[in-house]
Length: 266
Image (cartoon, rainbow, N blue to C red):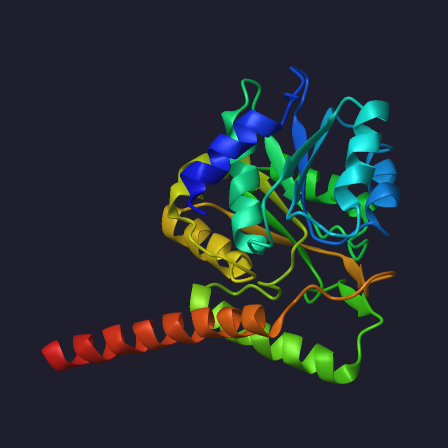
């Protein structure tokens, strides 16, 4: 589905709009999060911000959307976009960005986070503090000083660290955790780079950092504690895993080719 079609669907089915007092929007891409989503949203509601929670659900077959709709009856700050199928994390984030920027009252900051409770909502104030100090993309980092992971097997940890070393080389920035999903984006950043984001799946996390460098936005890492999924199963498919590494390798190969051609011209 093309982005234009998804955007049109958003306008048709959202039903609610951002409050005029909204300054922070939390963007939650979901697929089969019925076990987690209610407790996460209730925890987010405890944060003392002018908050809007935006859920982009890919037609979860486990009843996730029904839970969201019930919560909408209780809270007036929840937006829900149900997409027709599992379209990928990358498009969920860009659709969410587009939806939020299409509102009359645009949020000043957009937080993205996993909906499986691996990320702690209590870390959001730390990200916002860094944003208010002038950073445009703030990453909740598991690997910078002070960050840590709880509940991962050693092999998974090694694979993740290697992936982040490659990703850092890809974006040509010294970022410890390029793949973290807990982030804060400034409105100015999102407005500037949205049209340049084309990722379908998990490589969106690398592409957003790359665009920050290309467009001259400041990136900062804040240490967080990442806790392995409390409930449910992983949504990362082998196809998405391959797509992620293909993106890294393609960018590394492209840079190597450019350097080689430059040397030959000298």
